[in-house]
Image 1 (spheres, rainbow, N blue to C red):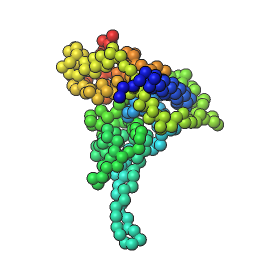
Image 2 (image 1 turned 60 degrees about the horizontal axis):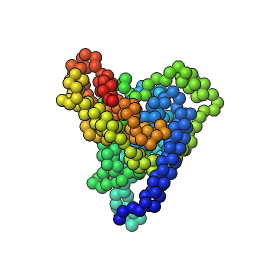
Image 3 (image 1 turned 120 degrees about the vertical axis):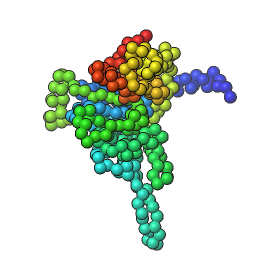
Image 4 (image 1 turned 90 degrees about the vertical axis):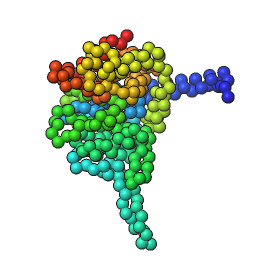
Length: 335
């Protein structure tokens, strides 16, 4: 049945109201987070973009840069049920997923009951994820992609929305296990957390060592967040932006694009990277107060979306080449 002009007008008006409400809520959330997390505007933006896109994020930075505080703040501001798991070498998959226990009823009948693990949350913080064994890391794979877990052959659906924000220390590598490529690809974005500038660090000193400290408050509910996530998927994307996403992703693969650049690449991003860049560009536009992404969004997000989905050849690393440098040259070619 075709929509009548009146129905079409009503639908467009409803979408416009949803978009206006979403812009207000996202702007409020960004302001509240900025009042708690100082000097990390880019990090806050990329973390918000990740969650609004419906994806998972990998926060990489040295200790003491407020990664844990950022995740806790995001959970509060976005109205999510958040839990934290400290990853250690002795952490087992059951410690995350849950396990079955034997119970005996008053009548003497025995039965297994599934006890849910901390993964049954809307926002899971996997702290220092690379400290756990590959067996435990892989326990997250199914949940991050399929939003359910399987224990003893039984499927258990996760809450919606479901997001993983993992942290990783890039310096101390003793006693750590590198994340496998398949798991890295599940992260929509790698967010590099760097040191704040002098002015921001001065503000941190003054505002966090006094008697009172800024406290986060909710700006939306989890239902609001899911409504915004659905809106992100409905935002229009121009052909020029689609072509730019395809150009930068495909040119990052060996054998495609400029051989001068791709000769440094051992393996490049797959189609999931293009999907992630498309969603993230839409979400960044929304965070910035716009309803359609631009080429600037693609340029800004290409590195965090692609860098953990690529690897350099041994020769390139020996020459001092970096993934960030390769991506920067690919971005320069966008027009």
